[in-house]
Image (cartoon, one colour):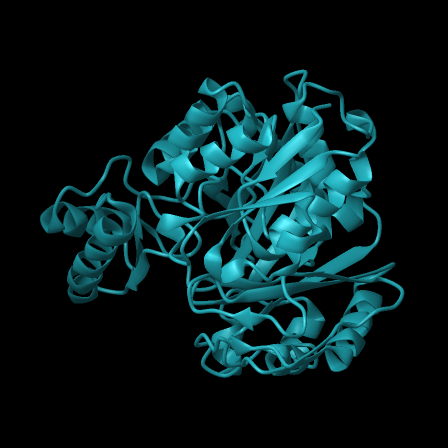
Length: 445
C-alpha cells in the first residue's frame, strides 16, 4: 500500500476518504479552494494546500494546481472522489504519466463509458439490455424527428456527454421534441463542450436501479448488490436504499450478471456503478449509463455488504487483493441514505448560508457523512449537498423507523435544508409500501 494520498475533492467525500486513510495509516493531503479553507476536511487532513479561488475552474478543476500540490507534498496517489475531475480521462492519464497512482478506473474505461451513445453500443454488443434509441448522435433536428418517429413517443432527449441528471428533456410529440432538442443541445454545448444528442424511449413509470461493481486487481469484476435510486427531483437523486424493494432474487441475479458483463466489456478496474431503468410493469431492465467513479450513495452498499469501498478502491489501485472473499458476497439487512441539501424543501432551489446550528443524530444504525459543522458557511459555488444521513436495520421497516427518528433529531439552522421533505417522505404511504417510481416526488408536490 502507498503511504500518502492526495484527495482531489472537497466536503463530505473528502472527509469520508480521509477517514479511511487514517484507519490505514496513510498520510492524507487535502486540496481546497479559498472559500473552503475553514471546512472540516481541511483541518482533518495531515496536510492541506490551497489550490485557487472559489470558482471550481480555478481550484478543484485546476489540473496544474492539483498536480503541483501532489508534487510539492510528495503524494504517491490521487483519489478524485466524485464530480469535478473524477471522470476526466485526460486527468487520469496525466496523473499516471506523472508517476502517480490513480485511484479509479483506467482512462480508457472512462473514455469508453463517458459518451452515452458509445456506451449504449458497447453494452448492446456485450449482451446488456439497452432501451430502444439511437446508435449515433442525432446530427440535426430532422434526424431527431426521424429517430423519434421510429422509436415511438414519448422519448427522452439526452446530452451524449452529460451526467448527474443534467442535459435531459422529455418530448411527448414532435412539437415537444423540436423544443427539447434545441434546449438540450444548447445546454450540452455550454456545459460539456459537446452538443451531441441522443434519442431514447422514455418510460413514464420507471424505477432507477443501479449496481455497484468493483474491478479487482486480478482482473475479475464483481457486483456488490443493487441500490434503489427512484426518489429524485429534476432527475437527481435524493434517497437511495439497498436492497431495492422492487428487485426479486431472480431479477437480482440477472441484473447483477449484466452489470458484471458491462464491467468486463471495458476491462474495468476499481469502483464503478452500472445504472439501469427498471420497468415495474414487465420486470425488464435497460442499461442507462455507467458512472466510472465512486458514487455519492456508496454507504448503503457498505452497510449491506460489510465492506469499506474506499479501502477497496485503495487496495485495487495498489494492486492488492480485496479484504473480502469475492466468491462469498452476500447482502444482510437494509440501508437507506438521505441527501441533506442546502435547499428549499418545497421547490428544491439552493439556499446557501451560514450555519448557526448543526447537531447530528446518533444511535444504533445511524451514520452521518457530513461536510460541515456549526460556524461554517454553505457557499453558492458548489453542489448544495451538506451531509448524507445513512441508516441501517435488519429489515426495511426498521431502517425506515430509524430514518424517521434520525431526521427528527437532526438540527440545522442557517441555510435552508430539505429535512422537512424527508420527514414528509418517511410518512408517505407510497414510499412506505416500497412500490414507488421516479415520479414519487412530483406526486408529493
